[in-house]
Length: 258
Image 1 (cartoon, rainbow, N blue to C red):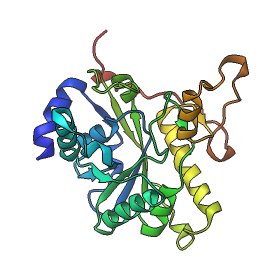
Image 2 (cartoon, rainbow, N blue to C red):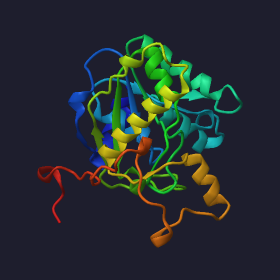
Image 3 (cartoon, rainbow, N blue to C red):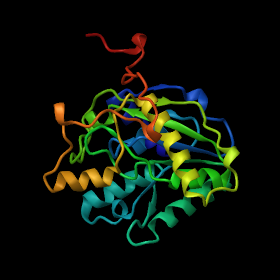
């Protein structure tokens, strides 16, 4: 039903292109770990897949009042978003259990390892919840790069503006070698960094080794990241070598005429 109601409009306005859809299995559990540039990320990935996938969303999306609040809640439900109360100390556990329950049913679950949207289009340090979910469930992790969704919906803009967006899906990552080690914080960090490195390679984003929420707090207090000669050297997750990659573009035979 959600594809019937929402899909045609999104296809018409944004003409999404996808690369690597064959990496998503036709059956069985899998975690799709994506970078997070805009609220609409949760709309476009389900749109380009043949299988149903759901993300979790903050409860506030579903509790708004008035016409706008009802429309927002209806749209979020329409694209398969599951509401989770993210306030308090049990928020991470609630999100983890929501994902594990869905994976136990052999379904797809989407997660944003950065925990929140990027404040400036760069890729930020991943939280280890995705690693814990992978090790507890045994499901493969499929890295996903959303392309240009932040240009369609810049931070602070409620409604996206029509423009082409892309989805690049990487090969599944298998972490079965770490089975039973989900309580080892060093293993969790190593797995998370491996996932974030894959996202960096797919998306072509610059990586910043701090949490996105920390950077948002810095910006809010008037301390944005340094740029130019004062900027810190480029880095990659886990201290690895920075990959030589660029932001993906639409296939040439699918690109609009100039």
